[in-house]
Length: 263
Length: 263
Image (spheres, chains in turn cyan, brown):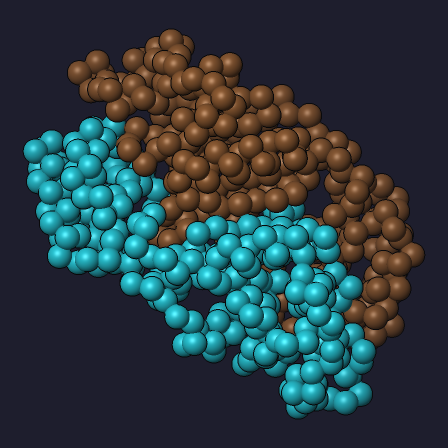
């Protein structure tokens, strides 16, 4: 990771169901792309269980280490939804029933169905502010630099889009990708030489296996586009010198789930 | 998580490309399912960057905390592949060129292409044993309780299948899933009462939004199938008492990428 992007984030995926493999996380990759686009470097992500002690300890560890912490999961109405309580305990504050959150639930849920379990979704830590939920109203919340969101991907995404305008990113990380059907082992040595010439650029090599052929995508990342273009040109020259064809991959938009292809 | 499954694991997904969002991890969910099936509880997973200090520190933190550690990524031939070296440093041992690993590479790669970068893939920590790679030969390795695998999903899976027979699991975690088209908020209170009756069973509630309807899947997990059946029956009775229809989900096999549906 280039040292130039000093605004950092940690994502915490909270939920036994992800650790058991029953639910496949779809939030991490989505958040990673958005944060990168905003000049925020995701420095770490963790998947942790619905365990009070663990959630509290991890939140207290990462909230002082990174600029932002984003959590997903555990803010629903059932007994295994303990994230809000844990965030309050991590900050040493009480949980209270937020009137604005309660009004939001009342506007969405008929009064005869607004039981105590559903009202629990209006309980947030003292000192936190609400995060809107356009999908099903029950809000998330922000406590200092910790953003607490739902685990259901459609809801998490709508919450993030709502507050992302207030996040302050660093210099935006730019990238140029050049692919080729040469195996990594053939380009490793000349690529190291190029890397050694440009300390401000981080060159990553990502092998793939497509339609029966080994190849790799070489991605140059940094904050100075002019320098990145120099590096990409050197990479293209290197590929040609090894009898390969450089393929410009900038027009390929990565999509969720497009994983095997990316390797 | 039920406390009965005492054999634990931590998965480390190593790679800047996952944290930047360019590559979507496909290894965590696959490993989680396999480990659960073997009676090994994945207690934590982390995505960390290709950073020597971080990799060393995290490996040393988790290898004493959990029964098994599984890493993916960073064992290829390029300059950004530093996992093997970091594992050696974490254990305080040297890296050496393993003759068996070198022979494997020689059997697969023509001699004129077997350059120093490719040979680097035969360098493993002193005291480690090889993990076979049926796809592209370059091996992973096992150092005490740390299993070091490739990041490319097809290779990681073939490596895991090769050694998984030697892993010793605890009591196998069993589960029964019952779904319904009732929103979580309606079942939360009676579900808590059921949970409170069965301390050896962990009941999880996983909300979903399918074809325009809110619902949830209620999963009972534990090691005693007879007790799980009692709990599932109580959950079905609860759903019926709320004018819902219990849906047996045991025949639904979760597939990779089937994420939104699971919520």
